[in-house]
Structure formats: structure tokens, C-alpha cells
Length: 129
Image: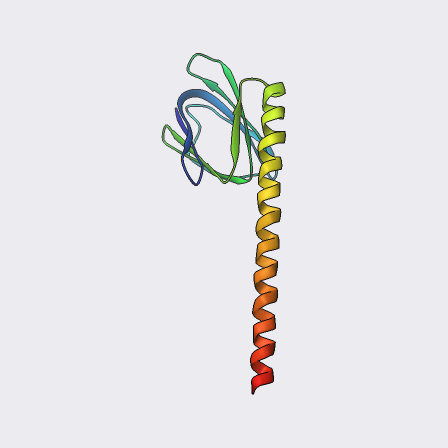
């Protein structure tokens, strides 16, 4: 099978694999080469796959969609981080997702300021009438 993990800005992983384990809202599932075509919404968690040499690879993913069609498996997610082992992956997740949280907080603050400014301008326009 061929796995592609797609992020909004680039392809994170494109590899041949033997098996993939992912997590949906109703629990974990495993896909092997002869599995039927399949679509699932992923929850934030671990995606584990075994490459063509049977090496285990871990990927932390935000929520997303997994589609298996023929021998192609496509995973589309907003955020994902690959790690060689769980310990290194935990460090990467902590640092990367902490950065994302900070960026999202700053964006929410900027949006709140913009909304407050718009409300003030509308109030000023009402006073002019």
C-alpha cells in the first residue's frame, strides 16, 4: 500500500507501508493491504504504520480524514508530527503543539480586537445619524 499524509502546506509522508493503525471516534482500527475501501474521521492521537521493511513509525495527528482506496491510503490533517519512537514524538508534540496553541491564542486576540473596533465604529456611525 502507499501512504500519503497531507498537511495544508505540504506532504508530510509518502511511503510504501504494510499496515496502518489509526483511531476514530469509536476506537482504533487496522488496515492491511487486502482491506476493503474505507473512509474514517480521525480523532487527535497516534497513527502507527509499518513501512515496507516492517519498521514501526509513529505519527501524532490532529483530527483529520483517512481514505483507503485501492492500494492508496490518504490521510488529511491540519497538524501532524512524525517520530521514530514514542519518547521523541512526545517531545516534538509538546513543542510543536504548544507553538500552535500560542499562535491560535494570538490570532484569537487579534480577531477580538478587530471585532471590538468594528463595534465601536458602528456605534460611532449610529451617533452621527
